[in-house]
Length: 315
Image (tube, rainbow, N blue to C red):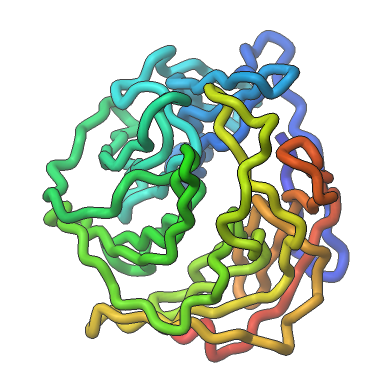
């Protein structure tokens, strides 16, 4: 684990967190979900995926952990959390700061993605499945999932079905945290072709940014990608263009616009991490692509910062 000091945007500094020598450590993984609790000054993590050395199969985790910064120790909360094994899912803290909303993702490498939604109560480490109606987003993974500021509502956007035939989603839904009801928004000016594994950040209740991702759409799945491997599509053109989505909550609509002045400010990227500290966005890692099928990804080591115009912070 590393911490990024952004107190000086022109001089970012990474610091490695040194775990206590007696602390257990979670198995290395990707596509987990995690949140920071300001109440506990702790980092909570659930699920995730690890690939075998030859990429022939995957292991999906169902464990949950907490890291306390006061002691620099990890604690295993559950070897098998109630929702089961899950990866590529979304999770975000609710307004109370005590519960995490967890939704969608994959729970197996041989079946359809999950579309259930759960609430994880951190103080008691208990799980409750939300009684969401039949009209809801279909199963997917690697999507954007954010709590709308100053509300108990949550945005779910894009993502994809990882199982053949691979399908990229361009839809947007809002979950009402009080009623557990999903509402689908009408989205216009959708970037074509659709983007796989972009970086996304919700800036306010009205604006969301999408950066990078693969924009080649549904191309041929590599012949070397056999079940039970979660197959990647053959892509050759990762993007660096930034798009903004203007959200109209009172109308259940949203509209994409291409913010051209931000084009080519970063290397092409996918799966990058992003966090916002107004007025900046900071992005780290992710992958470039060398045109190979599945294993030809190049990990980025750069950290980027970009100052977002005031109009996107209008809350």
